[in-house]
Length: 168
Image (tube, rainbow, N blue to C red; front, side, top):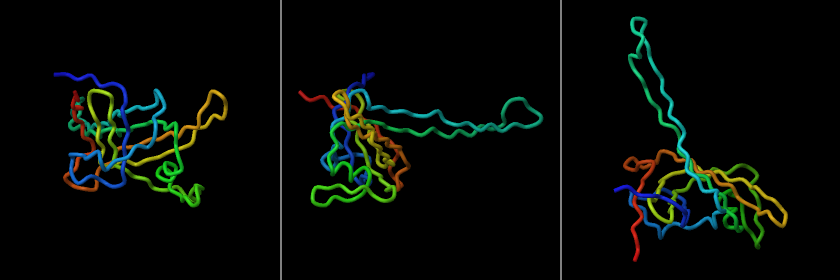
């Protein structure tokens, strides 16, 4: 049976990899509200290397390398804790101090659409940047890109996809 996947219910993350491929959502937290039309998943084309002999016009061997998978979204209501989570840095007395050097941020992710297929990533490299428009029609957004990486845990795969269970 085919499944239509659409909408977005939540993007959740946590520091560290899960113990196995069966993610427990209670350990994960939201980044904030996702700005409309910004949540996207992309998978780059893979790369093929062909090896030819002098004697034949067709390749003798082809090695394929998969393209990287990324999830991108913009947070429209970041708070100080979200800034620390995505950029590193420190919070003291309700003041966020941006880090002096770029922090290495990795989290495990769960992307939950309104219906269809749910995506679970054990390990992703997180990069964030500000995109702000200070006007009556603009918002300060945090643009987040999560690049799927090979998990450190041997038995984990880089991406899990499950069907969202219908609730009645």
